[in-house]
Image (cartoon, rainbow, N blue to C red; front, side, top):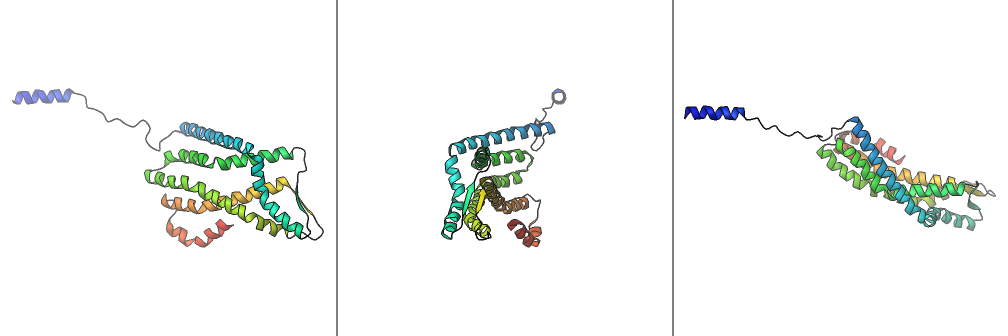
Length: 230
């Protein structure tokens, strides 16, 4: 029996030990070249999504421009009742083409925002832990409606803002506004309102990720509110 036990031990010692299979790419570990390729892939998909949205916007350009022009027309009607002249104008030969391209590209970015926001999240996800990745889902799916809500609020506030700014025009002076200037003002306002609507969500995500504590937010809440409103 002792001899059998010894021989069995020798056989066991001679057998190679089974090694644990190591993951080829542990979570969150990527080389610089892999990060660059991943960035290229996500950027390419985002650009394709914006281009696809721009093609849709090109077909709907007249309807989109009417939506952009609607707040201005509301102010024009009030100004005409008061005997004032306010009108949009195109000065350059190529300004009409530039205007359409600008409207189409911005509209394409808005239409495709869920796609490129998702691509942004997918690019950041490999470097996140399980808890951080879970909250990043909340950011990815919460940022889009919040951004669009900010854009909607800006659109609704446009007539009041235009009336306020154009109300400083002296008597017997006509407001002939370049369409490009009006479009830039409208887009900047919508962009700022959209970003302002996302900022609180960014603070919440930084808190859940452990990068910004709740106590620090509470101590500086006055400055945070002023910064968001600004």
